[in-house]
Structures are given as C-alpha cells and as structure tokens.
Length: 444
Picture 1 (cartoon, one colour):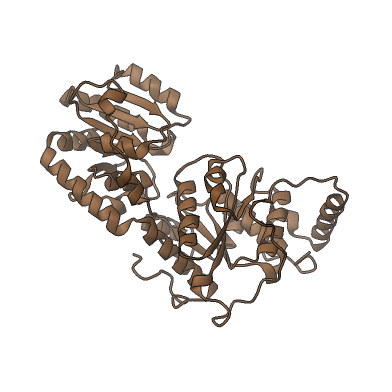
Picture 2 (picture 1 turned 180 degrees about the vertical axis):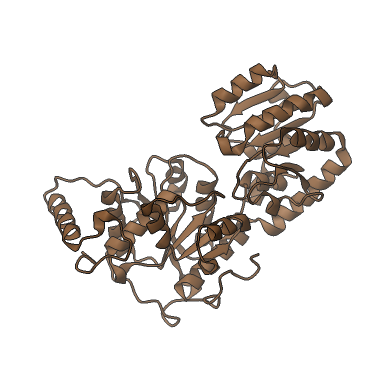
C-alpha cells in the first residue's frame, strides 16, 4: 500500500499516526477483502466502463495542459441543496468544455441520481469524518483513476479526500481543492484543523467567506473567490406559475416569497415576524415560504400564534422553483448567515427585485438601491419596511428586477463559474498561465 512505510504527514490523525498501526490496519483490510469476508460498498464503480489502475503521471507543462484536466469531485451529502447543485453544474460544465470530470457521491442521494446519466460516477457513503474504510476505498479510486486534482464539495468530503490522499501515498496524491460555501468559522478541534491544513486551495463562494477563512488563519494564497453560478437559461425557459390559483390567494394581491431550506441560519422566523408587520401596512399582501427542513413545525406554530394563517403560506418542497419565482412580485432572503445565496441569484435571473440581509455574501450579489434593498440580519421591522416600500412602488420594483436580471447574466452564469473553477485547477496543478496567481483573472 502506498505510503505505509513512511511516517505520515505532520498532524495526521491518531488512527494513522504510527507506521506499525497503519501497516496492521492495511494488512487486516487486505486479508478480509481477499477472503471476501469484507464488503466495501462505500466506493465502487457504478456507471461506465471499469477503469484500470495506472500510475499517476508527474504534472509538467509539456505533458499536461488546462484543456485536458481530469478532476475527481467528492460530495457526501444525501440531501439536495445549493452545494449539491453547484457540484453538478461544475461537473457538467467541465464536461461540456471537453474535460474529464468524475464524481463520487452518496449512492442514495439526490446528487447521485441526477448525475447518473453523465457516467464516470462512483458511490461514496462514509459514516462520518473518521470512516477509514470509506477513505481507504476512496484512496484506491484515486490511485486507479489518477486524477489531476480532487475537488471536495463539502466538509465531510474534505475529510474523506484528505484521508484518501494520505492512504494513497505521496506519489499518487493529487492536489486537493475544497469549496467553501458557508460563512461561519472552521471548527477548532484537532481533526478539523488537520483536514483543513491538507487543502491546497479553497474556492470561496464569496469574499465574505474568504475573509472568514483569513480570520481562522488560512493564508490568502490558499484561497480564491469564485462566485457561484446558476443555469440562467433554465430559469428563463421556465413557464410562469399562477400562484393565486395554485395557493388560492385573493385575486391581484401582491406576493413576496422566500426559497430556502427551513433551518435556523436562513432566518425564516424573522421573515414571519416581518410579515406580521407587513400585513398591517398592506393588508392584502401574502408571503410564500418555499422549502422543507427541521423548522417547518416551529414556523407553522409561529404563523398560528401571530394569526397569519392564509397570509404566510408554507409551501413545502417544490420541484418547480423557477416557475414559482416567476409568479412572485418580490423575493426576500432573510438569512442570518449566508455564503452567497444561489436562491438570490435565481430570483435575480427571474427578474425579481430582492429584499435581502447584509449577511455574508448577500451584499456581493444584491446591489443596494440598484437590484434591491438590504436590512440588518435578524431585523424584522427593517425587513418589513423594505418589503412594503417595494411592493408599493411598482416602477422601482420592476426597475430593480430588470437590473437584477442583467446582473445575473453578466456576473453569475454557470459558464463563468465553471471557467473560473477550471482556472483554479490549472493554477494549483501548475499547468496554466495562472499558476502563480491566488485568483483567476476577473475575480475580486
């Protein structure tokens, strides 16, 4: 096994620290696997022709170029949220550019299902950050595929990729790139510090995230800002949904909406409080909260307590979000913390003015006074005032919406995101003109 006879990198977890322990562990796994007494379902080839193991070539400007880059993407989430959508857009976009992109994901997850038609798909089902069995199988996949870079799309994926690189051995270990899409601090435990030290470059969804990593001690040279991207054509092609008919709303009433997972940091409880003030000023206004999550019950109770039944509607999960957006008059993002907020980008592409909070990267997408209005996070009265202002002022609301659509197409397309991500790969692998840059051209 690669790397077993050498001391592991400094700071490696206790499970792999002693060479003798690592050797015994590898031998035990190999023995059980050889006798077919150990089934390892965590990583397996499921789509496409089987691959043969090959030595990873050394990267040089002569033997490699950016257009031939091969990336292995790792995502461990079972749910479908913004990060999984970005991972899928990245993989598909790279393939459209003529580059090879393989994906290892949860076999029972929505990302795995949606990515199946593209091939080069592998199952990865770790039971936690320290699932060494899954990491060992991922290390075998890395040795067999020999990608030029590994791109981890979530925190657990970073752990799996970092352990897999350690187990694969130094010669077989490609650079590790990690997406960071949340604007909260890195955990301070020993393993978390170790795994984040293994990342060669962080792709930050906003400058706010880069600043937070800097506060956590990550050098600027290891971070690059690549704003998330959206499939603008998909949104523009979507038919408009008649929300008044769909949800039995009064004819002609103005409708504001929020699309996000129902989790604490998305701040929907503050939106419900804001709605209570809004309907006092605009009695026929309605607010739709689109999404599912752990706070559904608590929000329903809050709506009943404030006597907002019929005025604030919890729609649950919707698969037709672009059509829902086109039926709204105003979009509201109530987040307490937010990496960037792809729902905001979707709303802008749908031509909606946005009321957002000054949380995380939201001010990097919403230009205050041009594409929308911003309120302090958690400030329900300020949010209500901004909503009422734009719902009353149709001309300004439509002007903001038109400006937002132009901004979304110019700055937040999936094609732009994929191109900048590919530039990061080339820079980290040392195969492109951006090799000595911390950021690709055009990145703030």
